Amino acid sequence: MNKRLIFIAMLIITLVFGMSVFGQEQVAVSFPRTGTWSVVGSDSINWVADMVIDEINANNFSGYFEWRGGNNSSGREYFRGAFEPRTGKVSIQGYRLANDRGIGLGSYEAFLTRDNNDFISGTWSGGSWEGKWQKGGQVNVPFPRVGTWSLTGRDSGIWMADMVIDEINANSFSGYFEWRGGNNSGGREYFRGVYEPRTGKVSIQGYRLANDRGIGLGSYEAFLTGNDFRLGTWSGGGVWVARQE
Image (tube, rainbow, N blue to C red; front, side, top):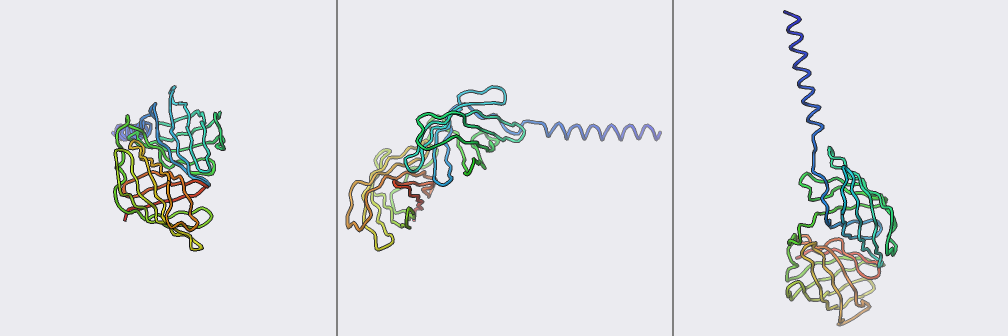
């Protein structure tokens, strides 16, 4: 009788342990999809990229980043990657550059979310990044709204501005910055901008100054996320963010 009880107990323990191990080995997330992912990142400067995964083979994949960054840095970085289905971790290594203007090869890690839409907690040698799957050109973020945005930025100094968007026409918009900086610098810079709904990217070009006290015309890029412009860069190596008031 005792032997029978011992056998049953051991059988139950074996089954429970086996189910636990089996559960741990299940695929936690699906595999990264072929196609285009929108990447944003930063190290000493801010970066954006189209990350194109064009080939998958077992748990490996390959493709390229089309990088754009501050100080007119840009270029294509071809990569090979490996994926761990149980944890969702991806490890990526750049191996060749094309049209290189100051980008360099990198090593990257991140985690793919369970819904297969985002790379999160990304790191690279000296930087951080995240990526979002692009869903066939659908609008992912709202359009910049008419009104006033509170902007802060820096290059060699600290700047603040009221960013006023006063007109929207299809995917274009216009308005002005009311700049305030150190050494009594300031003035109004009128701008025109274009917006990419699929990625949330805005590109802005100043075209006329008023009451200029040492400001100059600039070219600006950023990404819209709800009430904020983030990861903004401007000509000359500056960075900026803005929030709608």
